[in-house]
Image 1 (cartoon, chains in turn brown, red):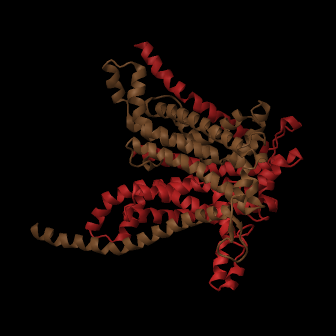
Image 2: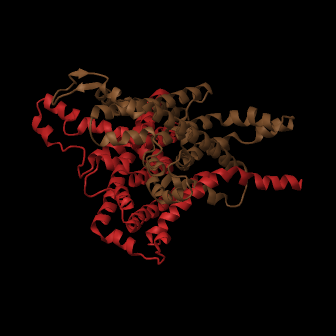
Image 3: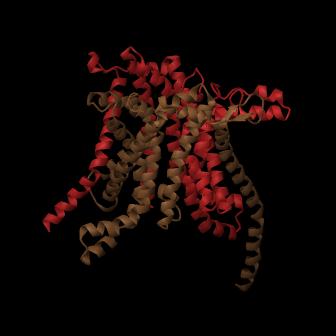
Length: 288
Length: 289
């Protein structure tokens, strides 16, 4: 046995040394990935500040805030549109997170008839494109008076966000279990304090991630908002879109940068919150 | 005691009620579209179900071409995303990527809206894009003039580029957690037993990550097949991606044309429902394992 172990040890070391070379390849690969992710975003930022960038110069000749001035020109009411978009996204995030938390609790901790059918249905909006749903549901929203209203847009966005929120919530709810709750209530805790002191802290990271994901999904919806909102409900994505397909690229880029900032600031804020909760890897919440 | 039993029976239904209401709206919308695809439009006095619109979707050349074009875009984007995304995930595992690296390299692109990526790629590769400028700057003017503008190119390389930027990180993100667990648990065992890095990867790591890869890939395929914004901004005039053509028919002043639109959407629905069933089967298997 000793001989085998002695032989085994250097062999093991050799593998580790041999693995160094592909390690370098991995570093290179990841480095290229980062360049490809961040250079386009950087170019967008530069373009948004460019005032005059004649062909074939590598850098703009003059920089200015012209693009941003155009975006925030009084006639565009951009602040109002931004406020409305953020409001809609917050409402969608709150509703779909709560609904997903409730549904995940039922699926994780209860037996009920139709559970599998329900689970399958929660996947459907995840895989059936919003374009199909939007065109099918528009007439119905028109008939019941939900089209061209903020409420209609919030409901439609919730349907898109729900499967993502449920995916995030279902594993953490199952992992949290019910034992601690049972222990707390058998020790005499009132139901309300069980919810606030035991249940919610256990699933808090999932709630934060689901909220963040739903917020960003809602904020980024274009087609669905256009069809349900019918131009009456102006969100930032809907206002921005026509600028992308033509016209002044500086203005389009300025819209893009604002969009990026609004979504990423919220995303990093939630990541910080998650870190506060001692959650090392928010990734675990999305996958599995 | 009986009271408690009834409570346990009712509570789950109360908990799923709001989600059910939303899903019901979704299904009603979906079915409403499907019914119109069969030529049933009560408000126009059309009650006879017909397969005409579906038959035309596959035989009228503009309709069938756009189905094929969307299939091409979805298949190509998914293939690119799987291959490079899995490789990226493996590379990140290998270098034991920190949380910050995952956050910036994977989650930032996931959270960035598709249309922003479309503007970025226009800035880089449209007729006077930065890449063409770079080529001119290094004296490769002839190469620069050979690159077709990213907007409206039939090969759809700009569209594929946007989806690559967005979906490669998505696949890597979905696979990374499982892959890093697998490679720390089994990878070492396999390499101690003498398997090479590549053999370990293809025969141990990859099969164990298969479920996660397939699930993520199904989402990519369905998304690309049915999305409107990117082919609208970057796609060619002909053939049009399916969702764009469906929307054009949907908006046609002649309301009967909606039947074509809904037949096209019906094709998407059928395809994506099959994908959803595959996704569900994988999910159920994972829960059992």
